Amino acid sequence: MGTSLVRYTSTKSKQPSWGVLKEEKIHALKVKFDHHRDVMDLYHSNRTKFDAAIAKTSISRSDAEFLSPLSQDIQLIAQGMNYESHRAESRVTGAEKEVQDDDQNLLFYKASSTISKPNVTILRPKNTKLLDYEIELGIVMKKAITKATEVTEKNLGDYIGGLILTNDVSSRDEMFGASVLQWYKGKSFRTFCPAGPVLYLLDGDDIKQIYSLQLKLSLNGTVMQDATTDQLLHKPPATLTELSTFTNLNVGDCIITGTPGGVLMNLNVKTALAIVLNLKKDRKRREKLTAAQLAKRAFLKPGDVLELEIKSTDGRINLGRQRNEIAEA
Image 1 (cartoon, helix red, strand yellow):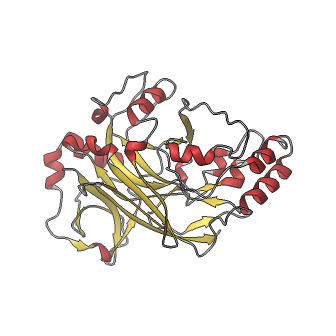
Image 2: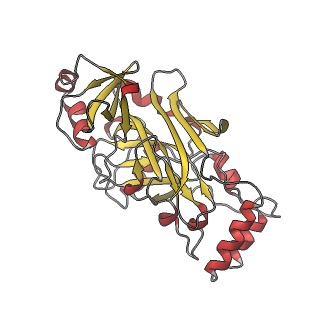
Image 3: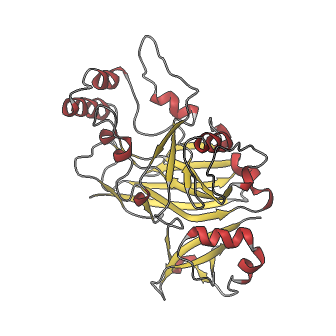
């Protein structure tokens, strides 16, 4: 059974501390590390020493404020279109012919400065009208990869040391605001990646549970996304193998593995034409795309509340819950 690592401040101390969450109680972890990679290294290399550092006394989670267990000085790599239900809503609907290469694993960077405490107030940037959510499972590296490497289901546990709940918040109008697409900018405003509260440190056969996790997101009390990780199209072994062919992965880096269907953005012919017919007219394309989307539905606005959770279908692994209110930047 793995360990639920948290980072928190308490009513008695505003100094960030590491702890282990057990049955709604937080047991302080008596270590001086600032970075989650160091805590993970201790856990995976010297479990006896890690367990000895767990305080026997505890505080209630209601007496704590959770911070993100992920440090910001890491690589934050994202996957897109990694659930068929999300691909379906991202295809152009209503067109006479739909063409999409479903074999591509869409990989991109998201600024690590987006990493925020799990219950952060998400700030809608100025001039953003198409603010969207994406619940995603994050996998955290425990072993570096610095050359082309074949990662398989059998050796995946050698490379992945932790699991975390994330929200890949997106400014859709910013993403499509330039002729070559501004995904990095549109995904990378501050507060755009609430992460945590739990960094679940894997142990033993826990890695087998990676395909039995349920993701659920609600907007103002209505469930919008509900799926399980067995629906992932490009699974972690194939993704790590592909990443290893062109980039280094460091201990502590996080790969967020894509979102299921149910996001607010939904392509149609009108939206596609707004993009295609105005490739060299950035302002006009953005205006038309925004108008086409807002004609279909409302996007996130100040006062909206998101609630997210990820846990295994058998209840053994629980990555915790996030509650985020939207506010104007």
